[in-house]
Length: 309
Image (cartoon, rainbow, N blue to C red; front, side, top):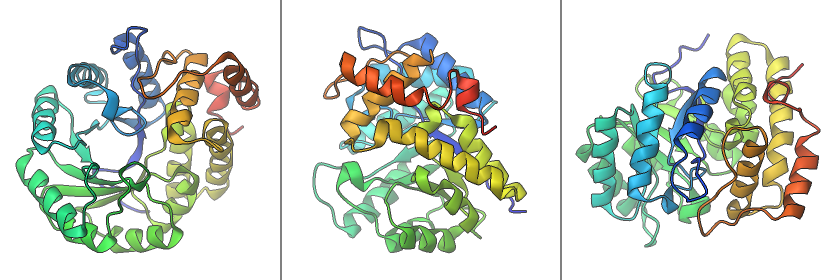
């Protein structure tokens, strides 16, 4: 059986629970973080699913503080410090470090088109300037830039860069990256392509980063644990069900539409409110009706939604 690395398992890119006044809903943060921990997962706050580029610094701090309060000692806490201002990313890193998160995650600055040399230099400087371990996050869907695997491999040698989170699609790329790092004890590959969770685990991925895990953490824990214990049938069942649930909010949707649907679904199961931050827009009644009809096929409560029975 594969020995699990320090940064492994199911890491859920958590939505940011909001009140009607668009500030952090601290009670909902507790509810959601506990839901993830009970589902066997680790929270990753202020990623793409967490609308991180739209959250104010003050609210980021409030979110991180509450998450640490609930999860410390029970799960590994990941926090995003992605941004266009290097200085601000460092300030966030300092604050989150002081609050008690375990590891930082950053994608590339996304305003200027960068070449691989810019990307390499950026991460080397960032990793050297922060005191917590750093995970490199490849997210071409929002940054419009891809980190070459050769660049990522050079970065993997930096003593403070401990992992790589992949959200780029491509089976060949996934196989190559896992092959590069699966036997490295000091470097983790986390797969952010939820539809390939089972496949990635079979190839030797160290962890999964599924946004649908906000709703169904247990399904992804089932995929992760089942592959490790050799129960491929259970893993496949969980993959099929999680794919079907993911389609409810992702199919034919751009990211700016998918996240409001996901938050609406979370609200339906009393995990947080459906509020989103601009530029995203809350669903209208018709859209809510469609989403409700679709999700009802998969479970009336969180327990049935997360079950493969």
